[in-house]
Length: 114
Image (cartoon, rainbow, N blue to C red; front, side, top):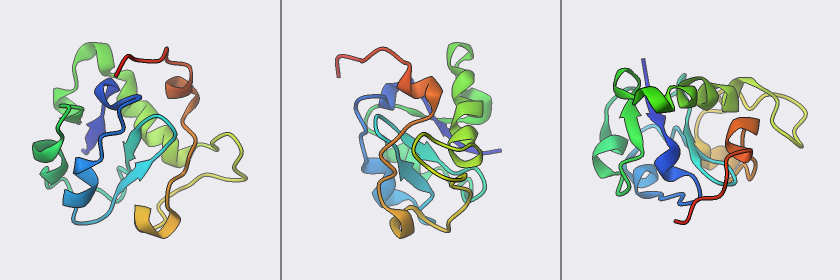
């Protein structure tokens, strides 16, 4: 079980969650943020501080956003555009900085008027 960042963050990239995460497991793509499911300790600090309501406990993810659960994990398991291998679990977002690319699912989403 883990927390998931949904579509409310796409093109907003509201980072109030990053400062509250005690394990630094929230990574920045190009258009959204991603929570590493292997590094998240399920504390919920990110959810309570997210100013745009983009973070959900995976069981509470709205049905129309269920794709974000698998997509969030794919950001870490798959090979992202322009990268040689999966990001995996590098031990904290601060160690790698902004990734600057998104999963194909998020990259294909139409721009939002944020």
